[in-house]
Image (tube, rainbow, N blue to C red):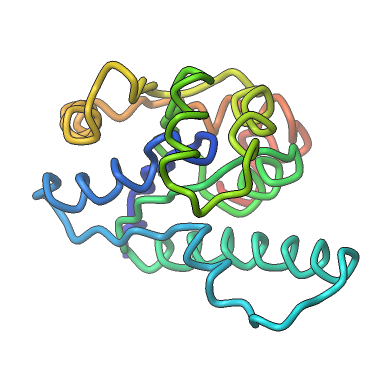
Length: 193
Protein backbone atom coordinates (compact mmCIF):
# COMPACT_ATOMS: atom_id res chain seq x y z
CA UNK A 1 0.00 0.00 0.00
CA UNK A 2 1.34 3.42 -0.94
CA UNK A 3 1.32 6.05 1.79
CA UNK A 4 -0.74 9.16 1.24
CA UNK A 5 0.66 12.62 0.66
CA UNK A 6 0.51 15.21 3.41
CA UNK A 7 0.16 18.90 2.60
CA UNK A 8 1.07 20.48 5.92
CA UNK A 9 -0.02 24.13 6.27
CA UNK A 10 1.69 25.93 9.17
CA UNK A 11 0.94 29.50 10.20
CA UNK A 12 -0.46 31.68 12.93
CA UNK A 13 -4.10 31.88 13.86
CA UNK A 14 -5.99 33.94 11.23
CA UNK A 15 -3.21 33.54 8.65
CA UNK A 16 -5.54 31.80 6.17
CA UNK A 17 -4.63 28.12 6.59
CA UNK A 18 -8.22 26.86 6.81
CA UNK A 19 -9.27 28.96 3.82
CA UNK A 20 -6.39 27.54 1.76
CA UNK A 21 -7.28 24.01 2.91
CA UNK A 22 -10.90 24.44 1.81
CA UNK A 23 -9.74 25.70 -1.59
CA UNK A 24 -7.32 22.78 -1.91
CA UNK A 25 -10.24 20.38 -1.44
CA UNK A 26 -11.87 22.09 -4.44
CA UNK A 27 -8.86 22.31 -6.78
CA UNK A 28 -6.95 19.07 -6.17
CA UNK A 29 -8.11 16.49 -8.67
CA UNK A 30 -5.54 13.70 -8.42
CA UNK A 31 -6.66 11.83 -5.33
CA UNK A 32 -9.05 11.96 -2.43
CA UNK A 33 -7.90 14.50 0.15
CA UNK A 34 -9.04 14.96 3.74
CA UNK A 35 -8.69 18.24 5.66
CA UNK A 36 -7.51 17.62 9.23
CA UNK A 37 -7.50 20.73 11.37
CA UNK A 38 -6.11 21.19 14.87
CA UNK A 39 -9.09 23.49 15.56
CA UNK A 40 -11.47 20.63 14.74
CA UNK A 41 -9.69 18.38 17.21
CA UNK A 42 -9.84 21.10 19.87
CA UNK A 43 -13.58 21.51 19.22
CA UNK A 44 -14.18 17.87 20.13
CA UNK A 45 -12.99 18.42 23.71
CA UNK A 46 -15.43 18.55 26.62
CA UNK A 47 -16.99 21.96 27.24
CA UNK A 48 -16.76 21.91 31.04
CA UNK A 49 -14.42 24.39 32.67
CA UNK A 50 -11.07 22.89 33.62
CA UNK A 51 -8.12 24.40 35.42
CA UNK A 52 -5.00 25.69 33.65
CA UNK A 53 -2.82 22.71 34.55
CA UNK A 54 -5.42 20.16 33.44
CA UNK A 55 -6.09 22.20 30.29
CA UNK A 56 -2.39 22.32 29.37
CA UNK A 57 -2.12 18.53 29.76
CA UNK A 58 -5.32 17.98 27.76
CA UNK A 59 -4.14 20.28 24.96
CA UNK A 60 -0.78 18.51 24.76
CA UNK A 61 -2.50 15.11 24.54
CA UNK A 62 -4.93 16.51 21.95
CA UNK A 63 -2.12 17.73 19.74
CA UNK A 64 -0.19 14.48 20.12
CA UNK A 65 -3.33 12.57 19.14
CA UNK A 66 -3.86 14.93 16.23
CA UNK A 67 -0.33 14.25 14.94
CA UNK A 68 -0.85 10.51 15.19
CA UNK A 69 -4.21 10.77 13.43
CA UNK A 70 -2.49 12.49 10.53
CA UNK A 71 0.09 9.70 10.40
CA UNK A 72 -2.60 6.98 10.59
CA UNK A 73 -4.63 8.51 7.76
CA UNK A 74 -1.57 8.84 5.53
CA UNK A 75 -0.16 5.41 6.45
CA UNK A 76 -3.21 3.68 4.96
CA UNK A 77 -3.02 5.67 1.72
CA UNK A 78 -5.15 8.74 2.36
CA UNK A 79 -4.00 12.12 1.08
CA UNK A 80 -4.23 14.67 3.88
CA UNK A 81 -4.27 18.47 4.14
CA UNK A 82 -3.13 19.52 7.61
CA UNK A 83 -3.98 22.89 9.13
CA UNK A 84 -1.78 23.48 12.20
CA UNK A 85 -0.02 26.07 14.36
CA UNK A 86 3.49 24.94 15.31
CA UNK A 87 3.86 27.60 18.00
CA UNK A 88 5.71 25.37 20.48
CA UNK A 89 8.94 23.55 19.52
CA UNK A 90 7.71 20.19 20.85
CA UNK A 91 4.85 20.19 18.32
CA UNK A 92 7.26 20.24 15.38
CA UNK A 93 9.49 17.64 17.04
CA UNK A 94 6.50 15.36 17.61
CA UNK A 95 5.39 15.74 13.98
CA UNK A 96 8.93 15.02 12.81
CA UNK A 97 8.96 11.84 14.88
CA UNK A 98 5.58 10.43 13.75
CA UNK A 99 5.17 11.59 10.13
CA UNK A 100 7.10 10.09 7.23
CA UNK A 101 9.08 13.16 6.10
CA UNK A 102 9.27 12.05 2.48
CA UNK A 103 5.46 12.26 2.27
CA UNK A 104 5.11 15.78 3.76
CA UNK A 105 4.95 18.94 1.66
CA UNK A 106 5.60 21.61 4.30
CA UNK A 107 3.93 24.92 3.44
CA UNK A 108 4.54 28.12 5.41
CA UNK A 109 1.45 30.33 5.47
CA UNK A 110 2.54 33.91 6.13
CA UNK A 111 0.66 37.15 6.70
CA UNK A 112 1.93 40.52 8.02
CA UNK A 113 1.21 41.18 11.68
CA UNK A 114 -1.01 44.22 11.09
CA UNK A 115 -3.21 42.23 8.71
CA UNK A 116 -3.39 39.39 11.26
CA UNK A 117 -4.59 41.87 13.89
CA UNK A 118 -7.31 43.13 11.53
CA UNK A 119 -8.45 39.60 10.69
CA UNK A 120 -8.49 38.58 14.33
CA UNK A 121 -10.67 41.54 15.28
CA UNK A 122 -13.01 40.88 12.35
CA UNK A 123 -13.36 37.19 13.30
CA UNK A 124 -14.13 37.87 16.93
CA UNK A 125 -13.80 34.18 17.81
CA UNK A 126 -10.17 34.21 18.95
CA UNK A 127 -8.57 35.73 22.04
CA UNK A 128 -7.20 39.19 21.17
CA UNK A 129 -3.46 39.02 20.57
CA UNK A 130 -3.33 35.27 19.83
CA UNK A 131 -1.90 35.73 16.33
CA UNK A 132 0.57 38.31 17.60
CA UNK A 133 1.72 35.91 20.35
CA UNK A 134 2.28 33.16 17.76
CA UNK A 135 3.83 35.42 15.13
CA UNK A 136 7.53 34.98 16.01
CA UNK A 137 7.11 31.34 17.05
CA UNK A 138 5.44 29.40 14.22
CA UNK A 139 8.12 29.92 11.55
CA UNK A 140 11.14 29.88 13.86
CA UNK A 141 12.46 26.60 12.35
CA UNK A 142 12.89 28.50 9.04
CA UNK A 143 12.58 25.71 6.47
CA UNK A 144 9.69 25.02 4.07
CA UNK A 145 9.16 23.37 0.73
CA UNK A 146 6.83 26.17 -0.32
CA UNK A 147 5.59 29.45 1.20
CA UNK A 148 2.49 31.56 0.64
CA UNK A 149 1.63 35.10 1.73
CA UNK A 150 -2.12 35.47 2.18
CA UNK A 151 -1.90 39.26 2.20
CA UNK A 152 -0.81 39.25 -1.46
CA UNK A 153 -2.55 36.10 -2.73
CA UNK A 154 -6.09 34.83 -2.20
CA UNK A 155 -6.70 31.41 -0.65
CA UNK A 156 -7.61 30.14 -4.13
CA UNK A 157 -4.35 31.49 -5.60
CA UNK A 158 -2.37 29.86 -2.79
CA UNK A 159 -4.19 26.55 -3.38
CA UNK A 160 -3.49 26.73 -7.12
CA UNK A 161 0.18 27.40 -6.40
CA UNK A 162 0.36 24.36 -4.11
CA UNK A 163 -1.41 22.25 -6.75
CA UNK A 164 1.15 23.30 -9.38
CA UNK A 165 3.98 22.45 -6.97
CA UNK A 166 2.73 18.92 -6.04
CA UNK A 167 4.06 17.17 -9.19
CA UNK A 168 7.50 18.58 -8.32
CA UNK A 169 7.52 17.17 -4.78
CA UNK A 170 11.14 17.52 -3.64
CA UNK A 171 13.30 14.43 -3.19
CA UNK A 172 14.64 15.92 0.03
CA UNK A 173 11.68 17.55 1.77
CA UNK A 174 11.82 20.26 4.41
CA UNK A 175 10.54 17.70 6.92
CA UNK A 176 13.47 15.41 6.07
CA UNK A 177 15.95 18.27 6.49
CA UNK A 178 14.32 19.35 9.76
CA UNK A 179 14.30 15.80 11.08
CA UNK A 180 18.02 15.50 10.36
CA UNK A 181 18.61 18.81 12.13
CA UNK A 182 16.43 18.26 15.20
CA UNK A 183 16.29 14.46 15.50
CA UNK A 184 19.71 13.38 14.18
CA UNK A 185 19.51 10.03 15.97
CA UNK A 186 16.77 9.03 13.53
CA UNK A 187 18.93 9.84 10.50
CA UNK A 188 18.41 8.28 7.12
CA UNK A 189 17.95 4.78 8.56
CA UNK A 190 15.51 5.76 11.31
CA UNK A 191 12.03 4.41 11.87
CA UNK A 192 10.87 5.70 8.47
CA UNK A 193 13.37 3.65 6.46
